[in-house]
Image 1 (tube, rainbow, N blue to C red):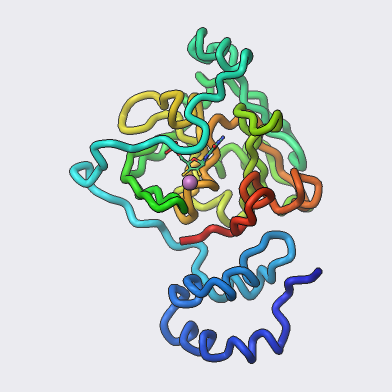
Image 2: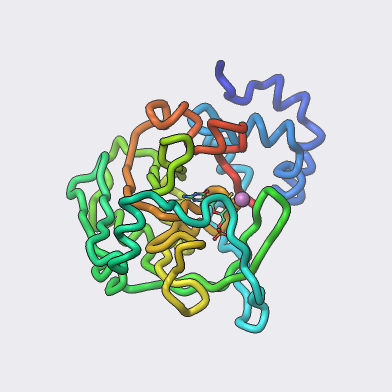
Length: 253
Ligand SMILES: Nc1nc2c(c(=O)[nH]1)N[C@H]1C(S)=C(S)[C@@H](COP(=O)(O)O)O[C@H]1N2
Ligand SMILES: [Mo]
């Protein structure tokens, strides 16, 4: 089924659309029906979505004194597989990050290499759909820096993250488009709150994609692939929760 926005959908959603054009995207983003049409991955009308939302805007950043005293963990708090446990035991000395798919120069990076790259540091608010938020500080290279090193091919449209934790035997996975991939606040964090990222929060690296909801922030990232389509990834909706419980692929906030 195509979810492209039809003239009829625009007309019947006219009141919402008119308000949106006058007052920015917030109201429409809160309208569940409209979100569903707009935000469901490959099939969405990206041109319209971009026209309606300012994808380049920065997420709010906070002061150190605003950081949450406690930042809970959610989802997997420890992948606890034999291979992950072995990597923890040696402080990730032999952990490697693969960057591949539709790239000119596939990368195979050690944690030391990632930590030696220019890093961005940001204090941001994490919002989980389950109804909690926390403000934390994250540090790591911009994903865009890695993607430029690897050289994205013209056919690439999405960046897919494959994680070390398994759900029913399959790794957790997530994906974002190239706008978010090259957004300046999209980083591969190896530090949280000024200490090395711990196991609970995604050691040794986790994605921060600050304009989106918590489930997009893949922890325990092992592989990053540039792909032309989400059709071949998992069940095709671009992420573990998108495939399982129909969360929006575009979880912009
Ligand atoms: N690999 C992996 N990444 C994940 C999850 C997970 O279960 N596995 N849970 C997601 C959800 S729903 C949230 S809210 C955040 C939680 O991050 P935190 O544990 O650092 O609070 O991680 C996201 N990334
Ligand atoms: Mo979440």
